[in-house]
Length: 234
Ligand SMILES: NC(=O)c1ccc[n+]([C@@H]2O[C@H](COP(=O)([O-])OP(=O)(O)OC[C@H]3O[C@@H](n4cnc5c(N)ncnc54)[C@H](OP(=O)(O)O)[C@@H]3O)[C@@H](O)[C@H]2O)c1
Image 1 (tube, rainbow, N blue to C red):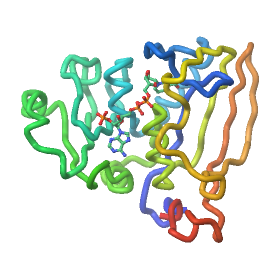
Image 2: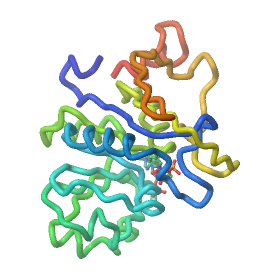
Image 3: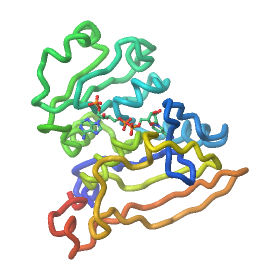
């Protein structure tokens, strides 16, 4: 894998979903897991050098992040609320907004004050979407070796499509929130069976009604369409 070649940090994705695959309700409520699930996430956060999250999660859920951990938000639109806990709260480590380089600069206007105050760095990389490899290279340059990818489903899909997830930690919670429009574990456009990222179940832990599943994300099979394109072998 690329990390052995020193090209990018190791990426561990961690999300909680019900058996229906949903990670939040149609109204955006995402606190699906128990206290045990939250304390496992907190442990992963403490061990991470950087956290990556999608802009929709900041806009809908506005989670509090530890002030001392680097947090990068990916966005095509550049819409990141200045009143979010991420930007308005205590900050002792970089906050990075990663946007495509073809995003019109004027759309970042509402962020000019936080940028001028040194509370937000902007990384422009990729066209039409953030170049995930470039984002990880930037985090690596800033010293990150372990990146915690907190979702949501659209962002996890972007990272999987880029072959940039090493491990998936999935908490299977005993709730069915349903809803056609509710976000699922993996969004994006989907893959054919031949192209779908393959997982290897490496650990199962049970506490209360929850299952804590740990999967290794396998590199694409050499003969598969993704393998031939070289996805995941970055
Ligand atoms: N249960 C859990 O473990 C868990 C974890 C995380 C989140 N959630 C919940 O899930 C919901 C959000 O999930 P979601 O799947 O709808 O959204 P998401 O992944 O949080 O964010 C999607 C947004 O991220 C940006 N994005 C993703 N990939 C990108 C790329 N390659 N380049 C540029 N920008 C990119 C885009 O931002 P723009 O829209 O700004 O262009 C996109 O609309 C929230 O309700 C949240 O609370 C649950």
